[in-house]
Length: 114
Length: 112
Figure 1 (tube, one colour):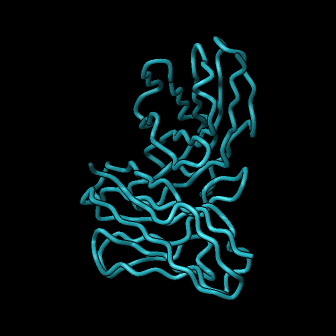
Figure 2 (cartoon, one colour):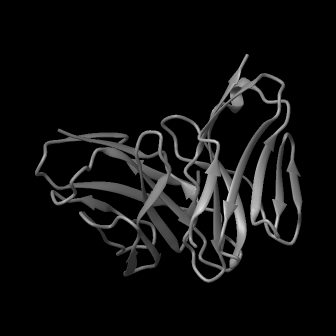
């Protein structure tokens, strides 16, 4: 089965702790993305990567970090510097070729920090 | 200039009715306009998309109408069903980068 997996589905952490969210894809896509979604709101881009070992900040990168050591994997670390980390986090991937813009999304990770 | 404005924020439609969601953009470099459907607790999934060289695209009960001169596009759901109840997002992207610009979303409820 081809697709994107995110784990875990639910994650609970204490304030002040860093936490890493997993995202893996077997679609052979070059580009990967992390979004944050708050209740009743749209998607905001945190980071994206168009190629291995390269990534760019999105609109709300502060307090987050990523790595792209393998084409299949794009983990997101929510650091203690992120002021309001409780949210629904979505990972997506797409082909990087011109004209192929569809982004495929994983099932999401709901992070709760108390 | 990078924004995509989506309306309404929420919409209630009777079963069998037509649901209409509107989006407007400013950046004339946008050349691909997808609509995504998201069910609660799930990731969004592509529903239908259009390029600016056509004014309408239909897939089953879902139609995108595109007005290039007005820089507006809309999603029409014909014969709306309770299973269509979801949040719908419009988006836009240009060929020069891979960053989708998202609308704020419309929560659609279809009443039986």
